[in-house]
Length: 184
Image (tube, rainbow, N blue to C red; front, side, top):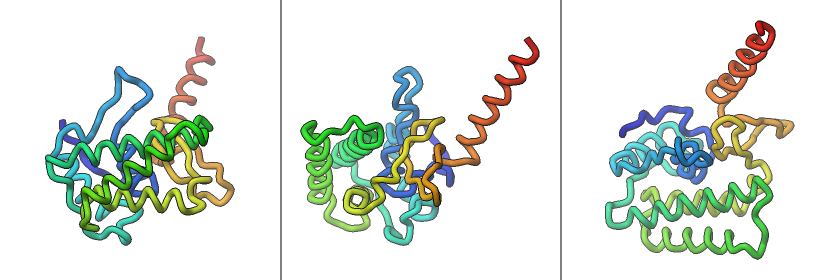
């Protein structure tokens, strides 16, 4: 299955979050879709990230991991999602090992992908930047699609990864249900 990598697909605000968001509807096992299940999509993602990603100036050249090392990249993706999702929901406690797992995955990726232009290396660097900065306090989970994103709004009140897509869907759904209640 192929996908078009549009600007909306890079709503996370950091390369590491966009990589984690490559699994759609993680919370619903019946509807979940892994956009990296087709290896060619990882290469297409790397190319699109250079043009559409929030960190495109930081990572101007990206190449996809080779087939042999793809599992290392995917393990990093899962560690990023696991750690930051738990961090946002309050499920991440110091003793649960998530941070250790994330750091291990970053270290493994940096050893496996020593070239800076490799998507695995860039994702590890993006992840470590999220850990080091104040950005972690601004991480949110989209109320519509469940993606991780950085809330860069002035008052830190953003609830959707992308107002044009997820925000619009939620508002349209509420409008539909209100109209339906009035008619019945």
